[in-house]
Each structure stands twice: as structure tokens, then as C-alpha cells.
Amino acid sequence: MVGERAPLPEALDLQQWRLRITGEVAHPQSWTYNALLALPQVEATHDIHCVTRWSRLGCRWRGLALTTLAALVAPTAAARFVQCVAYSPRQHDTSLPLSVCLEHEVLLAWAMDGAPLSVPHGYPLRLVAPSRYFYKSLKWVREIRFLAEDVLGYWERAGGYHNNADFQHEERYISGNLSPTQLARLRATGDARPYQGQVLLSLDLHHVQWPGAQLAGMQLKNCTLAGSDLQGVDLRGANLTNADFQGANLRGADFSDADLEGALLMGADLRDCSMRRTRLAAAEFWRPGQPPARVAGLDVQDAAVDDLLEAQLAFLRRHGVVPPA
Image 1 (cartoon, rainbow, N blue to C red):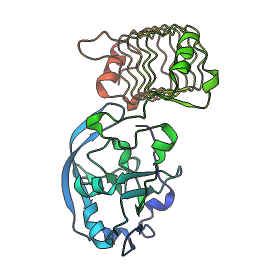
Image 2 (image 1 turned 135 degrees about the vertical axis):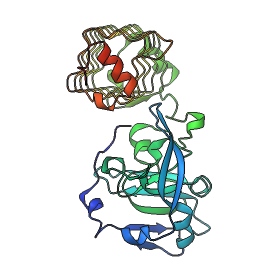
Image 3 (image 1 turned 30 degrees about the vertical axis):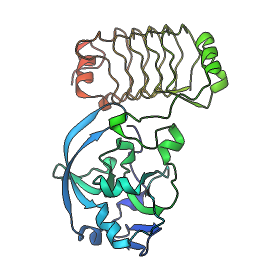
Image 4 (image 1 turned 180 degrees about the vertical axis):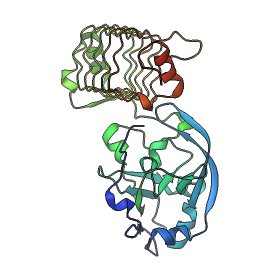
């Protein structure tokens, strides 16, 4: 998923770097990077499951089992949750139940598939929580806090992501957050002005008739707009993470500067659309056995096409939307 690409500078100064463990523990401790690497290491194979519907299987992680650190600091009887805090300009953090951390092979990793992690992927140290969506696997860890009460993490606070994040139950977001009356009014009118600045989550908006609607800057995460008439809609700067536009009429729509990470676009009419400077990580324009998106005239100038999955990028190249490699 799209997030920060670099930590605070002090994360990369390994002479000053420290990992601290605090909170409900008998023995709060701090480690230098070399001291951490001197602890018993493990190598484990775990899959990555991203909230935007892609997976990478069989990743070989090298690092330190969280149970090893827990044994050294001795959580008290009051400890029920674990909060991890990052060397992060946006103050990223995440939390997990202590039981998940101790029973589900949670790691603190510095290498994957035999190579050190890159900085954008979490070097020098990241959490790996294999039983949860990857937004729980915090990059650039600097502090671990054992807590009696849970604290919602960055993505849960800022974006409505599900706090449990169990990929086997597809716990991506909290449920739809409009009342039935509000949802019916929105479906009928396409007037989103009352919800400017609000994150709208998991709404059923399939087959709405909103041609030319003014939705710039709206946050419609994980919403279903399949089969809708959205011709010429203004979605500049909108957050449409995991939105479902399958079979929608989006001809001439303006997605400039929008976030389409994980969006489903199979069968959609995207002719003459602008996706300039759009985030497209894990967006899908086609799948085998399904109608592909119509993309003649689609403008992806300065869009983040390098974050597309390989098959999706190849599709856009075949249709002349993206120049050949």
C-alpha cells in the first residue's frame, strides 16, 4: 500500500539507532543495532497479504522473534496489547493483541529473501505480522510498548482500516459508516458535499446514475460503484482505495491526483479519462476471463505506473497507454 518511502534520518544512523521496549514490562530495555543483531536470530517463510488485494507468497524473512524480546523484558500480567512506533515523519504506529504477537510468529526483520531490506521497505528493522494484512507490519520500528489497553494505529485512525486486519476474514475496513437514510439520499442525488472531509467506507453505490458529479477530494474507500454511470465525473484528488468500478461508465472522468490503489477497473469504460499523477499501485484493469477496461485515450502522464503489478502494466503497454519498456 502507498505510504511513506523514507523514515526520519535518525533511523539510518546505526551508531545512534536504538530499539526501546517500555510499558507493562518488568525489565524495560534498550538495544543498539549491533546488540540486537547479536541476539538469537531466526529465518522463517511467511506470505505478504496487502490490503489492496495482492499477495507475495513464500517470502524468506530473517530477524528476531518477538517472543525472544518478550522473554527478556517480562511482560506483566496487565499487558494485553503491543504497540509498535516507527521512526516516521507521520508518526506511524500500529497495535496487535499480545496473544497474536506471541502465538503467530511475529518477527522483527532486517532481511528478506537473502538480502537486507531496502529503506522504503523498512530497513533497518520492520515488524512482520504474518497472520494480518501488511499494514500491521510496521516499518522502521523504534519503540515497542506493552499496554494494558489497546491504542488504534495510524491507518486505523486516519483511514478507517480494520483494527483486527485478519486477511483470512478479509478484515480490510470498518463497515459502511452512513445511515440507511444518508446512503439512500447519496445514491439518489450524487450530492457528496455533506461528506467533504469525511472518509466514506464500504458503501454500496453500485449502479448509481451520477454523470458529471462533482466528487473532487472525496474519500470513497472500499466502496462499490460497479455498473454505475459516472461519465465525466470529477474525482480529482479523491481517495478511491480498493473501490470497485467494474463495468462502470467512466468515460471522460478526471482522476487527476487521485489514489486508485487496489481499485477494480475491469470492464470499465476509461476512454479519454485523465489519470495524471494518479496512484495506481495494485489497481486492476483486466483479469483472465473478465472483460478488460476500455482504455483508448486514457492519459496516465506522471502517474505511478511503476507500482502496478506486472500483468497490469503489460496490459496498458499492449494498448499503447504506457510506452514500451
